[in-house]
Amino acid sequence: MGFNELLKDLDPSASVQAAGIRRGYGGPPARTVSVTAGLARLRCASLLKPLYAWVSAARIPDADRWRRHAEPAVVVSSNADTLNLWLAVGPRVILDDLRRRTGVAWSPPNGDPSRFGSVEVAADEVATAYAVLAQAAVAGDPVAETIMGWMRQVSASQAFGAREAIRSPGAGVKSGWYGAPDETCLRTHTVAVLPRGGTRIAVAVGMTSLPYTDVREREVYQEKVGKGLPVEPEHEKVAGRLLRELLVTTLDELGHFRDGPDRPHRAPS
Image 1: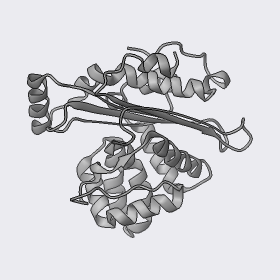
Image 2: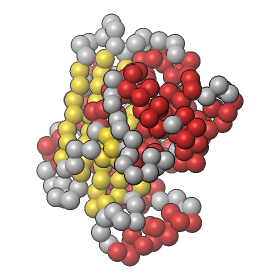
Image 3: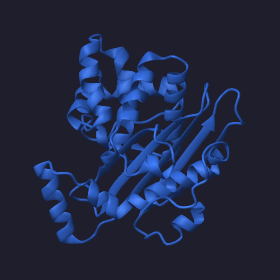
Image 4: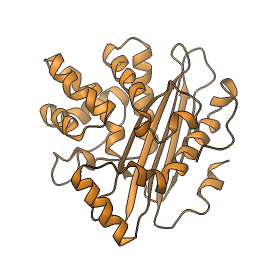
């Protein structure tokens, strides 16, 4: 299934992005793919947490303290631990360091800079940044290796079936999900990183913001958020299938499946 087929019936109020990169010495020519429907930039805080953890390590002299906050920020998507790193190092420093390392320039959010989740990004930028992180890991950067190891530990309950969809049980995955009280869409997003041997890697990113307009459903959702109850099942219901299809289609467009397992025709529902 191609992107046109996936997005042809998209609600006019929805925004969807997907992007991917395949590259590495000794492999086929570098290749990128991206598609955007709706807004050009979206908030996807959780996808940036491993990147923030990566660059903050050099700015926090106490390695144990860094790990104490960086690991849960990546593995269980802890907002409190991400905020600790964000404020300890400083948002402008973190984003400037990411720009120097990856070439991707992101801006601190307007208003309150302590709100790390308000940084707006495009899927192709996320894919670019993760490609640099992944290749740094396979080239021996110990912090990048650690981050990628944590991404492989992200549980199935927080991966939205991504590993099964792309037929890569060992993939590094990071997902995020949120719907703010003033939003009529739920935001659900995933990045998958697949090392291919040597310096060869493939990265796929899917980002969705899909309508969630029923007033009562949104009230129940916010009640669960306020009580700290899981809301992943609601995001799965709204966006799970599309998100998996975006990842599969992205990797298919990159030619990833021609060199790996049997080509999946449909993502699991």
